[in-house]
Length: 183
Image (cartoon, rainbow, N blue to C red; front, side, top):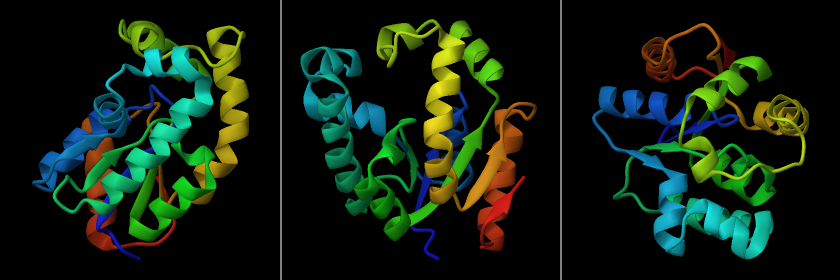
């Protein structure tokens, strides 16, 4: 198994960006936030991309940018993915072929609370359904969890652990070069 790239996946609000930055600091590399790469490449915010062409256009940008980041060895080793990056098989293939994938989990209630506490969530990311926030989270998690599980080399529950502890757990696992694991 290659650890050339370390991908963090999971629903938004599970701590991917925060934990990714902590892991990258520990490993003395950069953390690349795929959402920021997409915004720079498109010259638009994620919300503007969705408004211009819907989720399909956004997923096209996401796939292109993921392939570029995975191939560009000058960028950081730690890559924080968007929560839906695993939806496309081509993205799962890129992840599997170029690194390890850490899935950060949290319960729908914890995710909803974190998103409600984050003032930028609504500005950056549009709702993907007409459901209430908690119901949308439950529905999307039900669809995505099998893909997260399929992609994950390591599963870390973020409900009760601090970002620092999650990063320590991830770095410890990476140091051990273990296989499929759950903490």
